[in-house]
Image 1 (tube, rainbow, N blue to C red):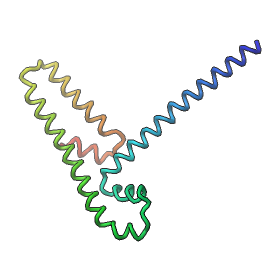
Image 2: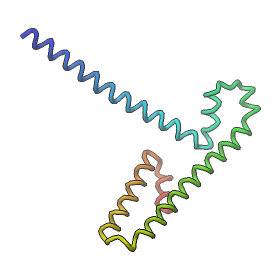
Image 3: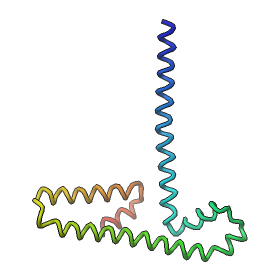
Image 4: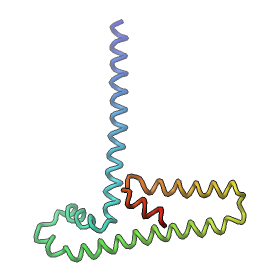
Length: 134
């Protein structure tokens, strides 16, 4: 009986450790993804860069305009990428349409919604409204 309690306690501790590790890894992965996303946002690009290189206040003052310009360029590239990807999917849908059944066309539209949902994630209502208008 005593051995059974010990075995059950060990199994319970291992289970708790596994579950805690799984969720910790998930949180860390989300933070890393968000950090990469922030690099393409013009208002956060400089902050992240300065933190990474451990810039002094004097260096920040000297490099601020250069970094802001590059942050705007990065944001522009990202926005153009999204626009180009949307145009490519539109073109694909148009070219595939004559070869698809009505059911497959509806499935393609669901596929587009699936792609859109993945991109939106936890973004705000303002962004979702802009996406829907496009």
